[in-house]
Length: 451
Image (cartoon, rainbow, N blue to C red; front, side, top):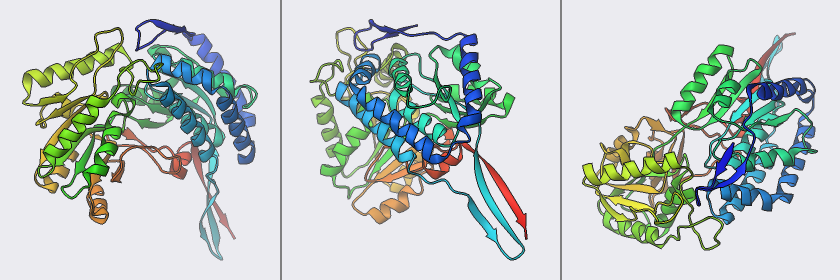
């Protein structure tokens, strides 16, 4: 299977395209290893995962370069992703998982215990291949499960290098990484050995995963798309807020599930915010991620690039939106789209109603904050959202009205290992991270003891 660079449109690697029989081998290895791995204690699993993190850090140069070449992001950002990924691995293993005492009286005692499930299937997308793989690996293995992990066919190389780094740190059969196309994912999620599926990706594929899981009653956690809204109130300090908002919208070329994708700005400060956002977009150095001068890399793959160009075309043809920055591609090989700001646009357009998942941001005017919240909540998506204001208490009250899985005040983005993360509505099912997320990788057992 050939891997294409989004910066050059040329092959950068060839990786295995696993057959169904090869997948069966990986599943059998994971199933066999579960018997012994599930009997180990948390301290031993923590030690193995720490060794894994150390091995990844020793190989950071190789993994970061592979990540940049296949995904497109600047090399410094690839290194940052690896660092955050390994920090997350260590943070997950610091969370204590203990039985819960529900009741303890003279008559009886009720305890809630958590046991490993079995083989976990992990499927990761192409926007953050390393950190999303590492998070799934850490949560599954720390809770006593074994794993078969499938990376996106667009970005498999860095994830396969994680597997290479795990050799000697994690016992054989506990972690298995298989690369391949869409058929491989369907085979994996429908395999009878799989007791849980952790999927990050599109809503359409998430629906297919649910159908596959139903056949074997596999547990499912789905982290799907988002069309996150940020609401900027008139009292917000725009000197502080705008750089943070810009970063939350355009980091990783806007290819983040929880990126700001709809920016609602109060009319009193609308023109000032638009002007500052446009200036920041114009200042971005767009280029090959291997070039140290690049601030932003290309869109990761051709289908996504074509989708974004279609949204731009629709914006020009069918809306009153004004493109105040960007709006054009680089005349060179690669999927390079300038960071784009669109003002004076509203709901009813593809740009506002869909999830662009790229470097295009609509800025929408509002006069009444209750109306802004209503409009933000009108989306079928519900991953996350934010409110920006000088009054943090009021901001918290307003953020709590957003129909989302995570709400912020004066910040946006980031998935902490300690904080449960997931979406409302069509943005997902279940939670990962934190104690709640770790429990989702385990089977609860109620133990009722009479005295």
